Length: 146
Length: 146
Image (cartoon, rainbow over all chains, first blue to last red; front, side):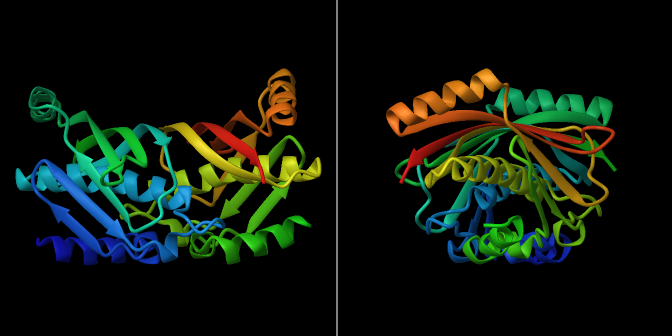
């Protein structure tokens, strides 16, 4: 499935992703970028709504682990288990969330455990902001073989 | 401003609240309930989308502190600074977030500091789920006098 086909599927399967007008997805193995225009995601102050920021960040980690597992031929239910979020400065342009896998040894541990138990948890970090980090999320995502 | 008027203002000021179809707000001084139907907030598994859950929970704490300050004649910018979220079980019905103020002494400390410095932070906890807690958020909200 291409990135574009996955995005179309997201819009169909999760209506809020269409309401947020998520229009950009780029998966590169170890990272995933998810983007949306600011306008449908504004707050009352004319900057990014914290709810939209939390939502696109949470979703970007979910997409990263879902696609990473599909790369390995695995169709898994992926769920966020917990997260910590820090809102460092207002988001004044497009919402661009970048989700990143942890260090190789942590990924390897996750993969070994998943193959053994058909379920495992992986920590994923997400940032919004280019030159300056405006927001960060540290999430634990659970994957369970379907 | 009545709860209903505040809800109409939310829909206008923050478009995602309309997309989520947030249709219920009930503020009682120490708590605030924010509700939305499941349908516009579904995920691909037919349960509550984590992004919608994070969003309505984050917003409920924001509404609680905003209205609590308005009760005291204060028009403040309220922003979430950080939060921790735990997703304990799928949400299978309406999303009903209940935000609660902390203990009286913590609220009193916040209020003293706000009056002194025109800015202060308050921890607010939010849960989703009635008999069983399905989701919890612990957030730090900053208020700054306008």
